[in-house]
Image 1 (cartoon, rainbow, N blue to C red):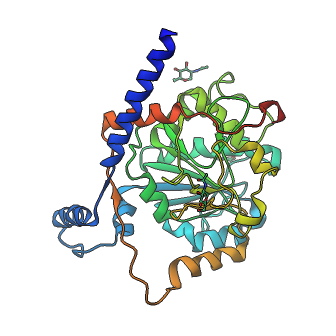
Image 2: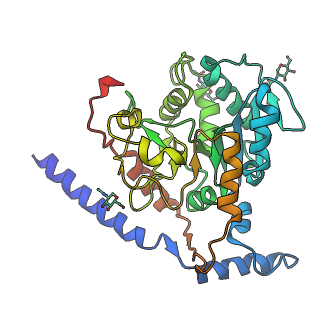
Image 3: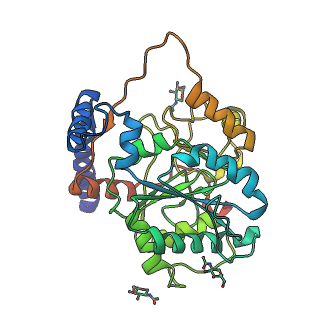
Length: 340
Ligand SMILES: *[C@@H]1O[C@H](CO)[C@@H](O)[C@H](O)[C@H]1NC(C)=O
Ligand SMILES: *[C@@H]1O[C@H](CO)[C@@H](O)[C@H](O)[C@H]1NC(C)=O
Ligand SMILES: *[C@@H]1O[C@H](CO)[C@@H](O)[C@H](O)[C@H]1NC(C)=O
């Protein structure tokens, strides 16, 4: 009884504090402008006005690690490299054939679906060994994932890459916290990558080599080394990492489908997709050009420019509160777990 009251009171306090600090998580374009100018002053050769996307490119450095295989080097992988991959700070393809022109490394793992987990483990080991301290965030994607890098950086900007956290589209499973969809792509902080390498890869207890899906297994290893599953939904509860192709968003995401069994957070079937979406899965090679056209070329004449705000960076205490808040988030899926 007293315990319940105590929990309620603690919950209320935490809730109030969270509401309070949400208030100062964003600051206006004017304030951003002054930050940008301060940065420019330090480097006078830069133009005074840089776009937010260019500025963020240097503030929030993302290494992209993309699963592919030799037969797709010239097609899917090349298309990815020519489109969104070009916006990564560093792009590495995980393959079974070295290809310097593409930027693919041979990880010496036989190509088959059941080896994806082994391959991603080897990929994270390779990336950690060669680039572990050179970037802030480490994105794992497939060669049919399309990522809007500007939105990814904007989303990540407030968070400290030295916090043990990772982000993506969150599925529910038989272990707590769930895991992030491999196809939608997921992104590890520098500390998450470090923990994975130092404490998960050498431990068959924390990170067993089982013949299970890649994303589920990586999620299990990360959970065991204290990496928190962050929340990527926007303030209307809509998703930013999408484990599907945009043309399937509305008709296919329906109650009773695979998504319905596995979602971690409740889905609003009539409004699923955030205005600041970060990724799409199941992208065909021709989709990449289509997205590029709609996102980066096509203009709708007569509409005013979207105004933007840059989220404020969290300090140590706020980041800690955020991690606690995320790690306490329970699945909103009402179906029984043994179905998984
Ligand atoms: C794959 O094996 C070759 C030959 O043994 C080796 O030279 C190379 O470093 C290995 N690649 C990785 C990423 O371990
Ligand atoms: C893995 O390596 C870490 C860091 O060196 C060490 O603390 C830990 O005990 C190792 N785990 C196992 C199971 O060997
Ligand atoms: C779901 O989205 C629709 C359309 O935006 C909105 O009207 C409705 O309130 C949302 N439902 C919930 C439960 O958020």
